[in-house]
Length: 57
Image (cartoon, rainbow, N blue to C red; front, side, top):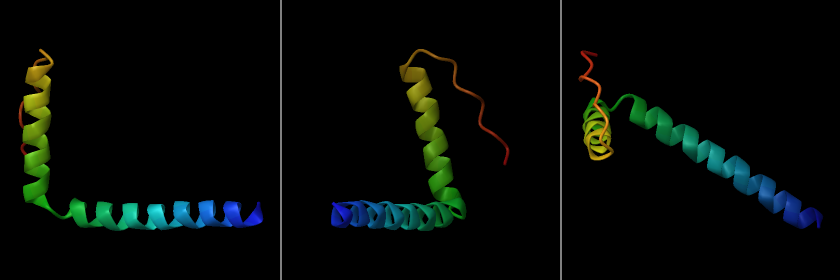
């Protein structure tokens, strides 16, 4: 039982560390951000919503 809890805790910690590393990498990637923004606009149009105008960031 303790082994299962330890394994679960270690997987959670490992996942959190990987998530933080990926987020840090993505924060500085303006090309990726522009692709994500374009995808959000296409998805809004597909749902029948009015897409937000592109930001001037």
